Length: 189
Ligand SMILES: [Zn+2]
Ligand SMILES: [Zn+2]
Ligand SMILES: [Zn+2]
Image (cartoon, rainbow, N blue to C red; front, side, top):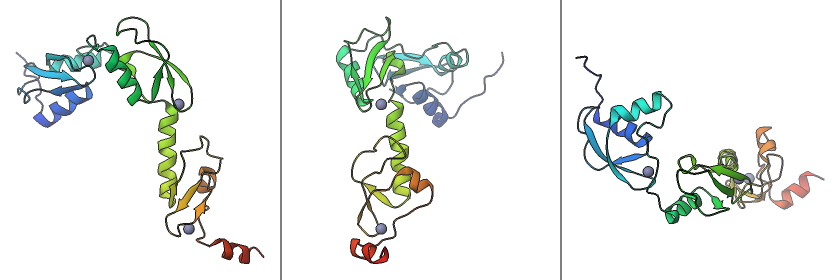
């Protein structure tokens, strides 16, 4: 019988978490041993073999990935909310057609199955933009205006003055000159 390559408990735990589960007991030691786990999304408890979770990924089938069959409608709404999405209709269940949802920030409509629930791309863009703003030495005072060319009300971390840089000007290399309004008036004269 061929010996399967074995996995360290740490790697096994990482794989399990990537598959959407939390362990209810320590890793049993081999990829074909049943492991008691809980689905992070719907909370269902099951025994699975790490090996099956893997083959599911390789064949692009659902494998032993959870279908979230036992997810309650209340919990589905909480999950949507955690992802910044507003339900446009009651949760239709895991099996039927995808769920119609709307991004609470930009209003984009989505049609998603519960296992594909994720934040709108606008949320990811805003997070990336905020990281750029902070890296340039500013603290945002309002949420991301939505596009790179719009001025963004911020505070310079160094001089504490309110500034309105845009992501485009930051990318062009412009930074706060740390002047007070008086100094700016003098230097522009
Ligand atoms: Zn589940
Ligand atoms: Zn959005
Ligand atoms: Zn400054």
